[in-house]
Image 1 (cartoon, rainbow, N blue to C red):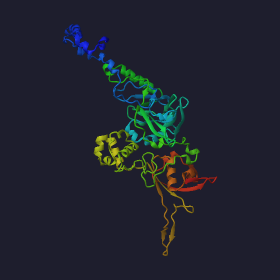
Image 2 (image 1 turned 135 degrees about the vertical axis):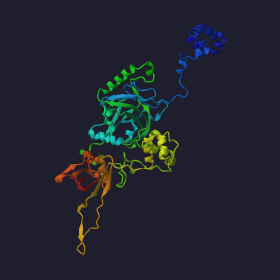
Image 3 (image 1 turned 60 degrees about the horizontal axis):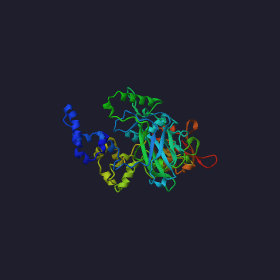
Length: 506
């Protein structure tokens, strides 16, 4: 039948149509469907295969980079749904880092390094809103563990891999575009650790592996965003992913051929699809080495980001320098570009395209019902609260006062007037309220240093005075277990070398 494709229209009209119709007329009568026409035959799918192989006129532009996770996708995913990949807890999986740039594309990157940050984050948006609390709970149950690690010995072509104790779910590294590069990642959290226990078993939540890539800016830091991509995963206990993949495959084999057409085939690898960059810019711009633990180094090694005032509301996530909380008030005079930045900063990146023509005043004019109708109940209410800058109740409130060099402010000073009546001295001892959200020793120390006007770099160790006057080293677990509205008197003592201070909480 291939010869039909080579005939031009003039030849077909000259008589071959009638000959071909005649040859098919018997078949048509035999089937009781009438005679075939040549136009019907040419419309059959078998004659369109050559045309379908031609590239479309408006071909989608290829991304500059591509990341391939070397793990098979599930066969139990419907055609138009996102792929789902099962991973084993703690197993090393290769992620190939590919440079897809064309010759003339981004020439400034030639012979240069780029930085990539790999993260494991929540896929479920409800969990994204409470990510900080979820990770803190996981950290409490798994002290000393990380959600994500890089298997450095197995990785190829990457340099300067770093992990930060304050970012248990992220790691960063540099890689050369001119060389083969693969990073091996290990995910240590399992999907069922973030689901409430229900009768009859648990259903694990899906995660995402996201990679953001940055170029080096004029300042020498890798802050210029180039590309972001992610994929959906579920993490099982060791060997659990293999069993789940086998179960899905067996279920698909039992389906009819018609049902199988509704599902994607299982691919040997998972290609990460393009997405919006992760909004945590504070971590992206960090250019310091991994922070050592508090018990072995001076506190000056902790991040020195500015701390909210004592009367500020607590941040839900890390506060930006100079801000008084996580959600900054969107100004009515904000431009469209500023409104887009505000949406990204507050993790509404999935709605930036929807509100791509909205200025600050346009967003502020939307009512609660408008936002619920546009974004759905969960996102709509969250966006409405963010626009109105509703403060979030802090997880822990602590009151502190710096001890006077001569006397303790906890002791009331009494004096007698001429009539012999006792009265309290006019000297007042002011306490500061510290609002904690991270519940870490570093957060408490930063805020104490701020209200006491002490340089953070001069503080070496912080102790809490315990029973019989013993000094107990302040730790994250101690802060986590402090009663709400605890009161402390801060006493400062010079260290042995006279080069710094120790703080004692009484």
